[in-house]
Length: 113
Length: 113
Image 1 (cartoon, rainbow over the protein chains, first blue to last red):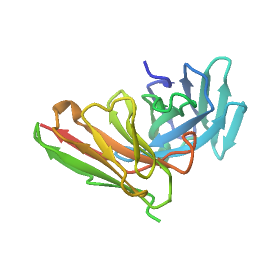
Image 2: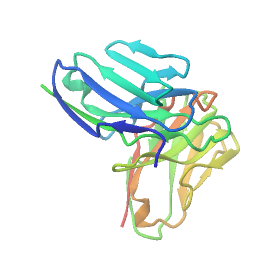
Image 3: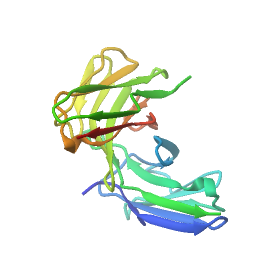
Image 4: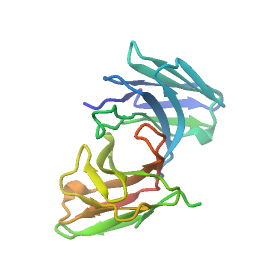
C-alpha cells in the first residue's frame, strides 16, 4: 500500500465550520507536504512541515506532525465554499529511495454554502 | 511566468497508437517528474529527471519512455498505448532537491480506446 494515506476519504461540512484531515505514513520522512487539487486542475502546494517541527500555521491552515505516530493532520478553520477540493499529503523520498515519492489518495472536501 | 505547462490538455488514442506528452517549465528547475492519477489511487510517479540529459524510472515506468533534451522540457512517450494507460497525467518540477515543493502542470487527460 502507499506511504501516505488520508482519512477520511470524503468530508462534507457547512461553510464556517472547521475541517480536519489526517494523513498516516509508514517510513521516516524529511518533511511532509499538503497539496490541494481543485476539480480538473493540477495540485497546488499548501504547506510543508519538516520532521523536526510539530506544528505550522499558514493563514487558515494549521498542520501538525507527530513523527512518533507517523501521522499528520491538516486543519482548515472557518471553511469557505472555495475550499471545496481534494487534499493530498505527500511524503518526499529519502536519500536512498528517490522513486518513492508518495502521494496519498486524498480527502475530498465539500464545503456547503 | 507561465510556471509548468502541459500539452495537449486532452487526447483520445486507439490501442496501439503512440503519442508524446510535452511538459515545459520556465522556472529554471532542475528536477522534473511525470505522474499519473487514477481514481482512488492518488498520484504515482512514472519517471523523473534530475537534470538535463538524465532520466530515471519511478514507481510505474512500464509502457512509458521519457526524454529531457533541454532543461525546460520533459517529454513522456507512449509507444503503443493500452487501455490501462487511460489516466490523467501530471508533470511537476522542483527547484533543486527532491524534498522541495513541487509545482504542477494542469494535467493531460488521456483516454485509450
